[in-house]
Length: 167
Image 1 (cartoon, rainbow, N blue to C red):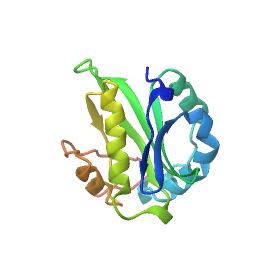
Image 2 (image 1 turned 90 degrees about the vertical axis):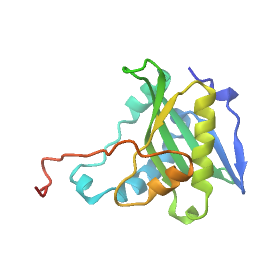
Image 3 (image 1 turned 90 degrees about the horizontal axis):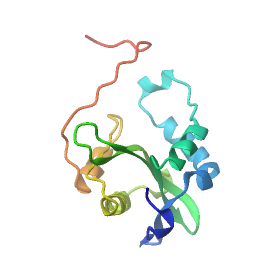
């Protein structure tokens, strides 16, 4: 399990990247989670946004999620939730991005690339051997992931019965 108190922060052009406890920042995250949900692909909006914060807190206690944050003068302006798991194929520690968001007022430039590289540094330092991220077709997040060193090795498809799909 990763000891959050031993993970260094990183300063980047007036912003601070850090690993913090989800349980300590959930109240700050909630409004930003709603902002992020407003940006999801229209097809996903058939679902009501109902995050299960108690489950996230439980997963954190079990060492299965990590909450990375971006702060500006102490205020939360961005985040990345990462889920940890042991690969059933390789028995190695792996990570999957659950959510990645930066407040629109702070977008542009290369801060998110630096943030993702910070996350990679922390995770690999604790033995994570592969990391997976998703990128919605409605944005260009894949470009920043490629700049951070990720390569496309699969395509993720979603089937939602309530949404009409072209054949």
